[in-house]
Length: 160
Image (cartoon, rainbow, N blue to C red; front, side, top):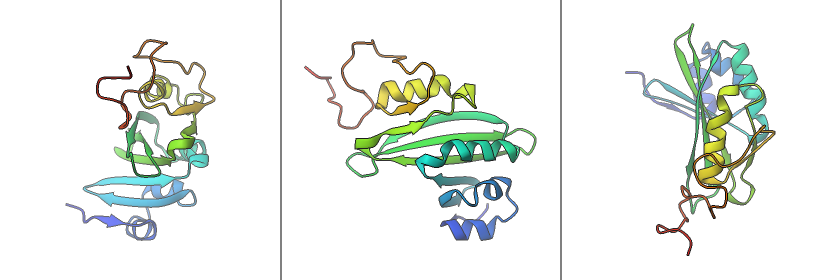
């Protein structure tokens, strides 16, 4: 099993030839390599640039995007993107942290159409807005539903 490596510089030194590390070297604000999984954190403003750099590096499959609510901690939301290189058989996770009072991030849907419904699901259940999304509306809850049910501060029995 590979040893765990934490911290941007430590990961970059331990994995200098990794294609994702090379692609995001200038964009990553934090990095972690643990149990064979590489996680790179980028700033919200860099997510589109990071996804394009990964595509050029050979990560040709947008696998998933999901969210975590770390309430009451700030930054409150963690958006985690998974990219896969079918040819290299490698996966990378790209993480963006968002403040609870400014939960807005650029949509990847224009460049990665597979992000469409994942982003709509995150919008619906967490209330994170994706700028530039072609059809950002609820996908699971009724249009008139109040609140976002996967937020940690959402009442267990809903708003009454």
